[in-house]
Image (cartoon, rainbow, N blue to C red; front, side, top):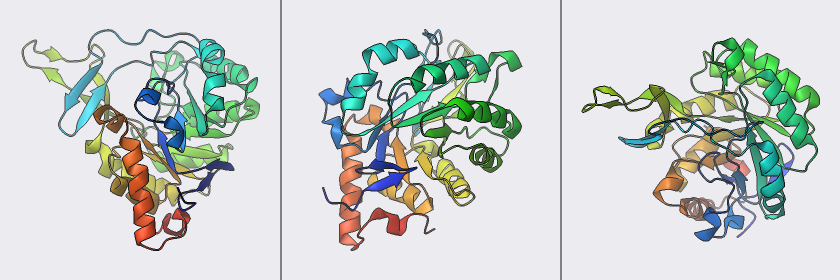
Length: 301
């Protein structure tokens, strides 16, 4: 592999700008049975919370036209278990280790960050799409000023590079991103899943116990691309583009829209090794078009 795809995101060097998105690759162990995950630029861990979480009851995954809906509910073994059983292995891999962390209260976030502060990792991806139990389960990431408060407090104690993962369900995603930058985030990633719904005609009830669920996959790509374009052109910190990427062409579009790194999510369920096709296709595109480094086309649209 040439140096055409080499990228530096917030001071962190990626051999290529392709990572697997949180919640779609576990902690990398299972995917390594399908391909050498060290060919990736980065890997984003399953979303972690301070305490172990069993996730949601009932149906968790539902296929829909050009996409997939999920209501997993942040099932995870908890931060301490991750530190004890997975962090050292992930840090030893030749790729960027992105640790995704969420929480249901301010205390959850701050205690989780304090635990992770004691250990090395490359990037901390802060998921602010979690429902805040002390605010009627409204997401931390819907209103800019609510997000400002949690990002400011996390940034004040966080010793790692901080990337804030944004929800497309925010009132104003650009305003939300600007708040994150103002409060010291090193980068942002977007988009998370879109709120959606499915109905079981036979049961005459919603498919999901929580009624609404998160939509991802090719169906959301044009909207995610638009949001990445808007945010990337409004900020001076780098952006990770996420949402419906299934081909190298999709990935190049996100780079042209202003993303520095892309994350592949739902497509991993279509083909666990699909990221390698994306990386190879991006490499060929740059070579065929005599582009020395992918930075030459970043944000040109």
